[in-house]
Image 1 (cartoon, one colour):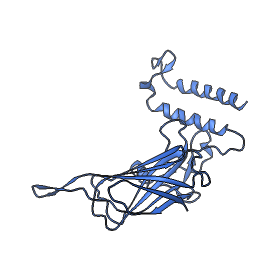
Image 2 (cartoon, one colour):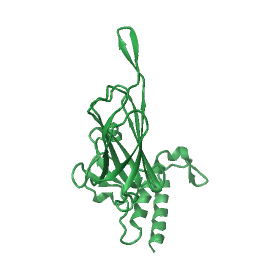
Image 3 (tube, one colour):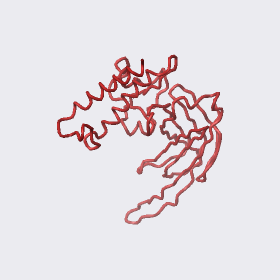
Image 4 (tube, helix red, strand yellow):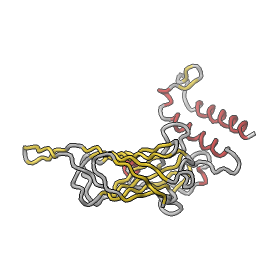
Amino acid sequence: MLNAEYSQLKTLITARFLSQFPPGKLEGGKLTRESACSHIRAFQLFTETISSKLGPPGAAPCQFIAYSCPGGMPAFEKGHCFPQLPKGNLTGETGLFGEDSTGEGIMYFSTRASSPYCGTQLQASVYVAQRTSAIKGVLQIALFYPHHSVTFHIETNTKDFVMSGSRMDAVAVAPFRSLDPLQTPAIHTNLHFFPIQVEEEEEENRTAIAPGRLYVDKIVVRDMWGNSEKELMVSDSSPKRLILRTV
């Protein structure tokens, strides 16, 4: 019965969605990629909020939880506004049931790259050791656990150096219900740092600065509810493997 209701509702939404486009934008009764643009993803996310609500009885549905970020998209992408529920930023659920949400204004959330798009939103925080000199580069953190993997990319701004004692953040999304303390007691992590050679300009002369090394004191990966894995470590530019244990 639920599947039938969802099918009818999805058909109704599709008809309403297609009616928003003027004649000539459809080919053979179907929406083209050019005319749909990014609207297709919004439609897919919207219908997924409905299908998740019509799941097995008693099962908690996956939610696209959005949160405010005063710094806008750049700050969101760097993980600066990642909340800890129930306190912290104003949050809201997107989709058909979003009218009951408490958040207001522009809000952000992360999705997986392919369907199902909803998942567990994560933040990775890297604490740089004091002995790290000024350096630029890209840090890649890859989490591996049974049947799944999650990758974070932390890019330094071209005008900013990673300074010792600083903290760098990034966000990513794990498959829904894939992280469980009982089913996933340990997570294996690969760490790769790709330094970028920069030039120091003095008057009319340019001096190339050799890529340095990045030393890390601590890595913390957490979800919106404060569940986290962390491990103290020291790393350089070579790939390292460590195990993040549940706190």
